[in-house]
Amino acid sequence: MTDAWRLFVAAAVPAATREALWSWTREWAGRDAGWRPVRPENIHLTLRFLGDTPSSVAGHLGETLAGAVPPEAPVALRVRGVGVFPGAHRPRVLWAGLEGELDRLVALAQRIEEWAVAQGFRRNARPFRAHMTVARAGRGRAEVPEAARAGTALSPDFGPLIVDRISLYRSHLGSGPPRHEALATIPLAEAAST
Image (cartoon, rainbow, N blue to C red; front, top):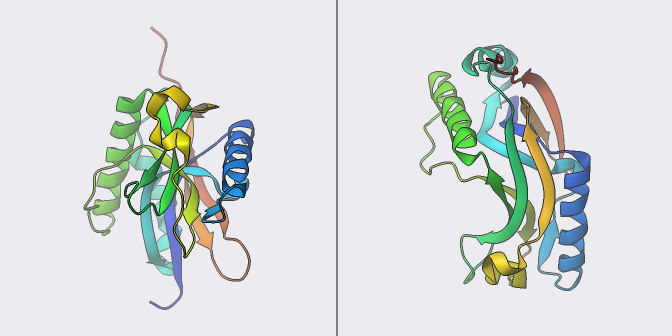
């Protein structure tokens, strides 16, 4: 695809929560070279990956996305726990979990999914799973962290995440670490008080 932009829709993560995730991941990954931690500035909550998109189409997506997200109160979440995808037998992604208003988050992700399909993107084959990628496995075998094997008993708590806006991001890939650029940001308006 010529002149394509790699796009996704996500919610930003507060700096303190990103730093807590980065610190824990680096400490754990330091004991095992099998993981490559995601840099703190690149940690985000993906709501819909769009993939390679012609730049001629990308320009209007922010405007149409704004119309797809009705005004609502921010979604209150907490970043807690870790796990691996696809499973402990062959882990490829180390993720941090989310607690809190997950039903509202899933509903927001579903609205974004319907928007993406209306814009001509293929429907996601897998349902939305609330998580944030904090590391990716390298070429060798990556060890599953004890906290991911032990369930809630050792679940680290990384802090709050209030989803009060979503952004359409462009990933810049190439030499060096990836960089994400917000092309459009849509605030979630506070619901009217009763």
